[in-house]
Length: 144
Image (cartoon, rainbow, N blue to C red; front, side, top):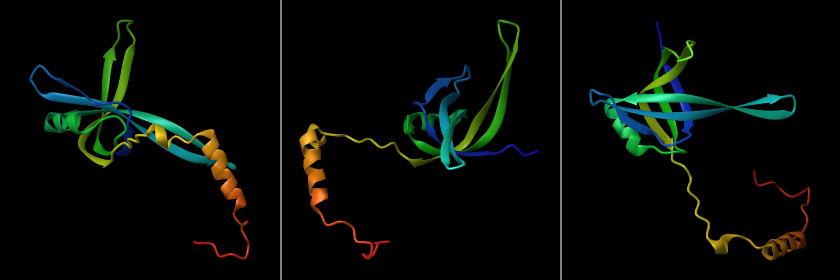
């Protein structure tokens, strides 16, 4: 039987590393995947969240290389944890066990200085200069 997962998602938080009694590292993190679809003329988006675990050397590497906002490709397999809660009910959770993780994109950190924040006066000034320009002529060529 085949049990293979290939997922592209973005970390929703920093990875958490812990160690099993045997000393083996385990890293856990969550990724989000967004699905965009169209209903009639309107675009909708739904988000899905997945729990991911990694073991051994991969776990150590991921705990130091990843953080919230990183976009990654995860290759792995599904596992199902089952347990009985204190209330006597049976519970189940499906996770992804990562076998390989590749970074696609790091999070964008945009530092905005106070001088770069436009004042209302500056915005009005820019709007006036746009209004003063010649209007678009339908006979003009489009640049694309």
